[in-house]
Image (cartoon, rainbow, N blue to C red):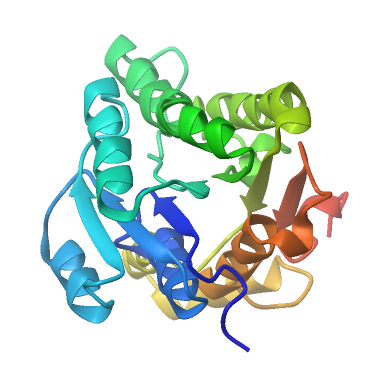
Length: 257
């Protein structure tokens, strides 16, 4: 039955595609006022605005690596809806390079978005949450924050740090009504993954190969991550804090297969 976060105000970053879009749609279905965000105001952003109720949504363009843009995002959310109850830090960037060939710009951009960006949004929302004595932050981390896949540096470094940020902030503010948790998705069929599979010499064979690596023998769906974010954001999870939930079909628990 809809209404698990009825009339809560949720900021969802990177919410025009993939996991973020799935979270925004589900939160809207469950009665929340949803603040959408992307660093681009493109066709995907326009499509999300057209899909969701304009009376209960707000789109704010802004790069989460930009502190001023993030502060403006929080201020617009409060000006429109009066409060901030939930933050889902979903926006991120894949940065896979050879460590010794990586540029300083690549290193800084990876951390600016995948770690600093989550902190920027959380820091902008925290004063409002603390003033009302309640709030839930959900960080979208990654299985890369648990296991190292060769050839993906420095992305796992940033995701390990994001899980550390989650735990630290969760403990820091628990007594003041704020919960901070994270989700670590494995392989999820987002638009980026679809494009990656399509770029392989034999897309169907590669899709089958990737599915066969996973214990359920299928690739995860964005909605499955979204439902976990909904649970963590809701009062149903009110005693869950400073915790990370893996959503990878059990793949990270395998020694080898």
